[in-house]
Amino acid sequence: MKDAILCIDIGTSSLKAAYMEDSPKSLAFARYTFKDTTKQKAALEWMTGVKACLEELRMKQPEVGIEAICISGNGPTIVSEDGTTLLWSRPVPSTVTDKDSLFLNRIDGFRKTYPLEWHESTSVFSGPEYLIYSLTGAKVTILPEERYEKIYWTDAQLKAEGFSADEAAKLPAFVEPGALAGKVNKQAAELTGLTEGTLVFCGAPDFIVALIGTDTLDNGLMCDRAGSSEGINLCTSEPIYAPNIRTLPSIIPGMWNASVLIPDTGSRFAVFKDKVEKEIGQKITHKNLVALLVDWDKEGTEKIISEELRNEGLTVVHDVTHQLWAAVNILKQASQKAKIPLPRSMTITGGQALNEKWTQVKCDTLCIPISVTECVDAELVGDNVLARIALGYYDSIEEAAFALVKKAKTYMPTVPADHD
Image (cartoon, rainbow, N blue to C red):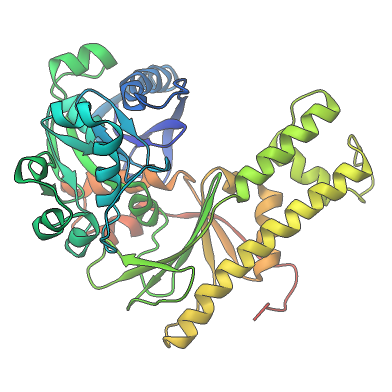
């Protein structure tokens, strides 16, 4: 029997999980798409997602035993003990004036939107910590690195924003990524099918584990987290600032992460894809849709959509790739100004990384090599890294990432000129 880490990442619309060995590849992958459309109790579906993914993973790899579990997820999603959920993306009223914290306005928004649930809950969690609580009963808040304290909250910040001592006490104490939260309890085992007593480790916020899972941990390294939205991330040795750049500490002490968010690249394609499917009367994959657009003039390409719709699709491609180029250029210019080495390549993660033609289009747009890793679900790789450090397989994040993050393929530009 093989042993693996069960790595779990909570997204906005789905929960994904994988069996991860001490290897860059996953043994098996599963995804559960959430069915709750109201989202007010979204967190209550996470245990259902764990059970469904576990059943699928066991079907795919029945001989695998779970050595431990590691959990990451999106934030700042806020959840009370009864599962009432304020997703990170939902607009809420808040009177918080603090400019440093990413959490205080969400916590304040929760207590204003759900005053009864706020009052009755002895503890309030972020996303992955609520699933950890559901599995183990442990109450924790995962702090990515000590410089994140004011980005989360301090006693002084809470007091300044009008939180009473009793309200501040609802927020669980900080622990490090990779900390042992506890063990799967009897109730959670019965609900999910997990073995009672299985170790549960803390992952980190999804963007942190994605940076680990792409090994974007040293000066000048860049990655593209590509899904419905897109984030270009650059690791730097000192903070860089410019309009449209969000700079936060790296999980590596002394390093920083500069990011530019492109909010709608994937969602724009999704809208266009729906339009194409209505015209042709059948489903089409994202991969085949991109191939249809870029290979239109090649011999043998079946022109299943109108010329007008194809031109509309090319406009989407042009707009999205221009946004991507602009985002990378913003980071390049800021790096140049700060006299930091310019990024010369990029690693891509997420579902878009599986689309070869689309990745080549990106590569040609940016005129830099783009690498795809053995496991494109970087959040799960990052969870694997953190769990294996905790279990004693590795001594540091850098050492573990070097061993567990490997390139499967590197795309090279077909045009030599840079856009600089």
